[in-house]
Image 1 (cartoon, rainbow, N blue to C red):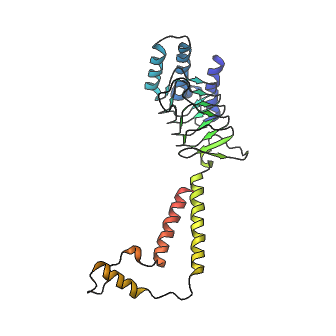
Image 2: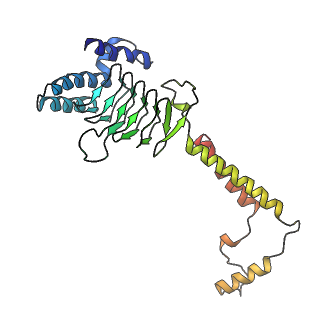
Image 3: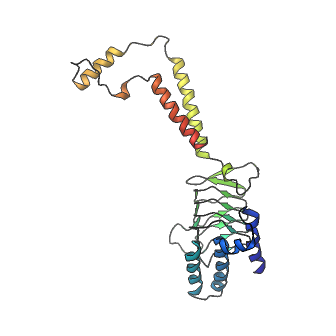
Length: 266
């Protein structure tokens, strides 16, 4: 037990650049405090002692904002960074040297009995706000992106992003645990591919158009007059969606697309 507590303490200095001295870590890191209280509650839970382990878990949630059921199995060297809002269920298993950020839920999907919470392998990174739900098996060295919702098993050495979580292979590329900015964005890649496809189709349509545009203004004006019944003033009230696309409209749409793509980092 002492070696496990030392591993929990030392891993903070390895993974958190803000950790400067042992006194600060011991008194100002709720993730470490929650783990210390959980390990004591888990020991009492395995002894079959009623009520007291749950009371310790409840007090730990009150003081740290981290709720870990005393039945959960937590490996050595686990680091809960910040930790506010973290929930770990009764039958959850967290492997050695896992990194869990704030807002993470390792929960179930219903009221089924038995093993109903996920099992995390070693060196797993779960980003802020991610949800891993159900009796899932998350392999070793898996990275789960912030805000992802994982509902299926994940093999080792993969990255999961999106809602629901999608598996993205990294082709053996090593990524450090704290480099969330390098997580792949599958949705952004799909949107970029769709935009490129639309641009190609627009170019093909333009190449098929005749050299001299047909004169449609009289026909459009007549259709507008018959539709609205108000052609006496000579003004067309045709809906905007019927009007031919102008260069100004194209420029507006292009600017909107560019702003969206730039904001999404595509």
